[in-house]
Amino acid sequence: MIVEDEDNIRHSLECFIPWEKIGFQVVNTFSDGSDALAYLRDNPCDAVLTDILMSRMSGLEMIRNLHETRPQIKVVILSGHSAFSYAQQAIQYQVVHYLVKPVDEDELIDVFKGIKEQLDCEQAEHTVAESDTRELKQILQKSFVRDLLSGCVASDGELSAYIKLLGMERITQDSQLIAFEIKARSPAQDQQGIDVASLEDMLRDCLSGADKEPLVFYAEERPEQWNVAFVGLPQTDSAEFRRYCNEKIRLLVGSLNEELPYEFTFRLTHSVMHITDLLTPTKNTAVTVQQMDEALCQSVVSDYKLLIVELDLGSKETLAHILNGMVQDLDGTALEDMRFIFKNLYSAIELNYKKRKVNVWNITDGKFNFSHLYRAKDAETVAACLKEDFFALCDGLASRKYHSEHNVIERIVQYLDAHLDEDIGHDALAAKYRIHPGYLSRLFKQEMGETLSEYLFRIKIERAAQLLKERRNKIGEIAGMVGYSSSSYFSVMFKKYTGYSPREYCQRISL
Image (spheres, one colour):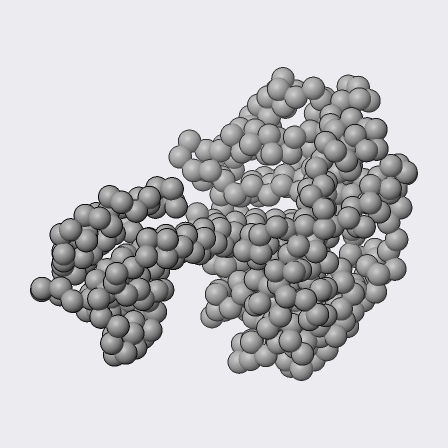
């Protein structure tokens, strides 16, 4: 939006600057700040180019109002006055640039190119943040239902805390639940693996009620075998509920066998009228969560990504620093709430490694186990238990050696590790090792638990994290060293994987 009281200047700025070429569209122009504010009350805008001295409302008064109500809008001042007092107020209101008339066209274009890049980064970070929130909720939902089915949810208080934390408003303690095991047998050895997303969509469609979609828990336990649970089904009496379950499973068998080239079998494992029937109260695991701070819980649990980076890098000192910081952040939190929060942190980490075919229980001989926290009587002991468990996992990961039955995957992994600074294409990699691209994708996922792109993304970011710790290179240099030509895009991707931008990461791990 352009706000300028001189008609000829306003017209020139609107018509003669190539806004669309630099990624902008002029949504409106005004000759006074009051009219501009009235427009902004009901319309979106990313950037404002404004004069200072105008008839009814000055540019500075408009900017002050925007700073208080729409601080995300980028403001550029274009004024014939270079007085220090104006510039001082511009800084106070976080104006992006202060340009003095007459301005050079190229200078103005460069300023808005920079704003466009900044807006793009902010939008990408916002998208990543939304994606991370959804991913974390999905992880914790899986953890919740898995714990519920395995008897690890002990009390009404813990059940209520999960429902509140995960925003499962349609789930109540009287919600019904069914759970079953699915097995699939491929008709041919060369058949491709099941598309997990398609399978889950079909399950959701088949078991959804007329007006509400249930919460689905979906765990890929072994190849071609899954555990599925649905919570929040339509409320019915017991006889109707049994008929509902039988009918839905019959429909599932028919749909899956018809749509996918596999033979599916089902086994009902749970069918309860009230999810409270699955609670297993015990003396040492009862949770009395009442006033838990959900935002604080989300903040702590979301650090599972950061902890995984440090676990993969074997950074015990950094792990201890982060874990101590987490416990300090929870200072004043009830011990029962603290245990609940860290229980979810353990689950998020365990499920993340499970996707990579790493069983944390096996590689730690059962030492990475949140139940250890129940012997802690204070925050200091909680911190000690956390470090003991995380160090055990760190040692287990370090001693775990990758070995594949397929020599080609081992050679590809070694090649990727040695060429992180290169833009490695999937097809080029398949050609280099004389393997069909489709077969390479299936084989790599089968062996590694990650797709080729997921693996490459992970090791690039982990290498970058190690370089940031060494503090010998600037962020832009590190971006190039792990194959990113744009430092801003690298920063967005780094935050997507770790939860922190490179600068935030350095501050977070600073010992």
